[in-house]
Image (cartoon, rainbow, N blue to C red; front, side):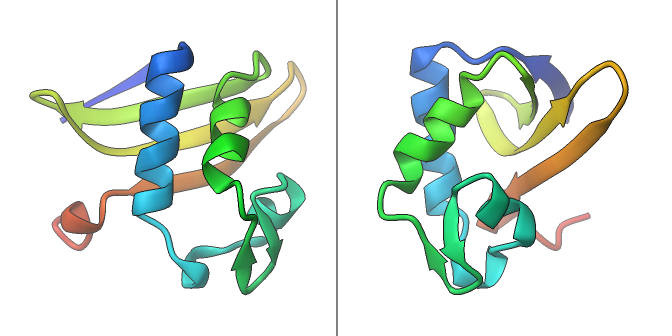
Length: 101
């Protein structure tokens, strides 16, 4: 498994946003999702979740760490940072890869 820091372009941001939407449900919502505008509250995602995630991934202040192997995406993390602090905003793992170590 490879884990790389990436700077998504428009195409990869679209793919990762779709990956996000396909691999989360309402039980996944955290306070960070609400604060980032991905969720309305602890029970509802925003209606345009894919667009919100795509725009966030294209932000220059965010770091995106991608877990992948042989062309397959297993997950990614979004890190918001400055020189003084960092916040791990989200981690999304493919449903099929969960509980596999």
